Image 1 (cartoon, rainbow, N blue to C red):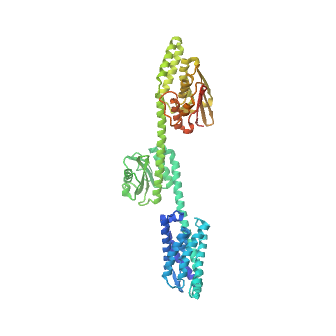
Image 2 (cartoon, helix red, strand yellow; image 1 turned 90 degrees about the horizontal axis):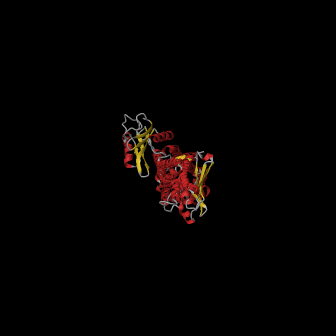
Image 3 (cartoon, one colour; image 1 turned 90 degrees about the vertical axis):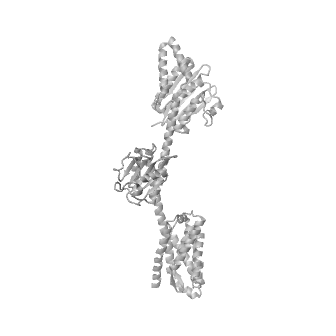
Length: 567
């Protein structure tokens, strides 16, 4: 009994050596891919060699007893089958089993062990895959280890010569060997599983931290990298990561510094440290491991190591994020991965901000273009109408001059991008007053505007082009004239606007091509105003906010749209 207990203790001591070996293997990426089921065929062949070599090592670490060797050879072979599958387990078992056969050629248990070892690897792979798929369960692994080692004992009883020697070996080392190998398989699998869980937790925490930073910095960085936005981002990064300092630089100066030595590094200070300059010049991530590489004199700064990451917007660079620690060589691999992730996210945020800015500039440019479109025919006709009224009705002529001045002041002078609907209606009234004076009974105007809609903000110069389009291309070509109806109402957070005329309508083939993306923008006439307004709406609010045009030849046209409004 003492011999059995002593052997069990000795085998468990040897287990510690295997545990260290497997723990070291977890640091290699190919081994991790085996655990996740993504290893290539070549990598699986390499793993089979490794597990087989570990089995050989376990043989050398065994204890010769009564013509046999008490060892933990089954442990790496079974683990190879569990992690790599039946083929890896079989190949590892063949390597370790052949070595065992020739290691003690002619020994009492040589043939039995040579056969049992590859069978153990194959059995482990088949049984474990059928029971657990890819989940690592140490209890099931313990049972497989017992089964594999018990198989070896059965083969010793069947194949050992003389039979009495095999029986004595099984009686002496059977229980310690079965228990130690089964326990070893379970323990090593649990070690592997726990290390993977810890690594996954670290990765998950890192990802969560990065996403939190991105979420909290988005409102600041979407407007570009300024001293204010950089300062806010630096504070958020330091708060969520525990870094000693975080800074942002332009190509010429410090934008923001948060953390250690903040009193020495003031926003707007000219010049950049060596590590930042290297990142700007190379366009790549630069790691500074000591004071000399950071570039701050040791007597002036406590920052001893850094990671500098260039931030790019499209093809443009010119800014850098720097992460600092106060100890030399203190930047970890996780810090480097965090820097890469933040740089990618910040670059995307800045690029999205740039795109949003460009979209606003395009919309403003379209407004300027509309403001610059002074129809010379309208101006000539308006002046002619006013001249005629100066002879017959001077008071009306005076009113029309005021309306004309209001109309052109609105068209020419700069204006806000968003104005209340009431101002847009005033602009339409100025235009329609002139046209009404010119065409008199041929033109009628009806307003159906609900009170809550008047204060809603709409894009400047969005309504008058639609009204003018209805007058010029709907009412005037119609014999006897017609009616322009302007309607607006608010429904919850939506403002619905329509301009309707009972004019000549639009031919179906022309209507189909009017707002088509593939159709060319007309230089004048029907479609120019509609194209301009439709383009502005889709640019500002998205394609689902495009104009809706309903028209019947001879029956009139209705142009409508809806936009979101503040609650």
